[in-house]
Image 1 (cartoon, one colour):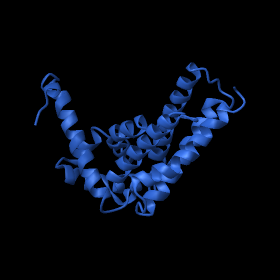
Image 2 (cartoon, one colour):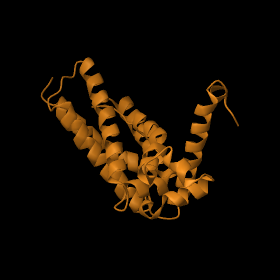
Image 3 (cartoon, one colour):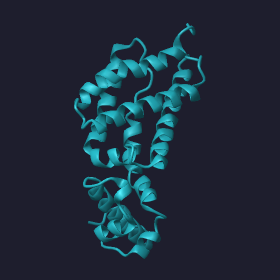
Image 4 (tube, helix red, strand yellow):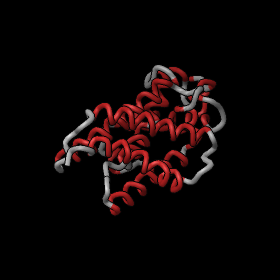
Length: 205
């Protein structure tokens, strides 16, 4: 099905998007069956119904495809991350719901994220995800500054520390087969996440 947006785009752009979409779909199916490190360019090209040369027209290797394939999902994930709630029950509940959406999105694509973030995955992709999460957390903290909450610990330090912790919890959960529900993970993770935020708030009143 061609969307209205695609119909208004040059045919070359539509072909690029279709090819990249086919490659991404093939990769997502493959990572449900085997580790990312065991997936070759030939495997992906065959699954997408394109040639190896067509693959290399778009990506240098499978890891670069993996990063591109999960970019849209990463955007959805990081946009759901909460900012500081401190002592507001309403904001805390919203934060927990946001984290539940975060873990729910991870669970929906368990094979892909386990492959990308696990011990046999891609350090490049893991670093990409961590930096994106840290950037959003910095934005949340900067927004809190505008509300009269100046930084005590530099925001870049808090953001990097929090992003690393969140990724660590998520990876452990994925590798364990998601033994707890997304809602349970959110309930347990939020007090830890908010504690990082509170460090900045302490002493500023």
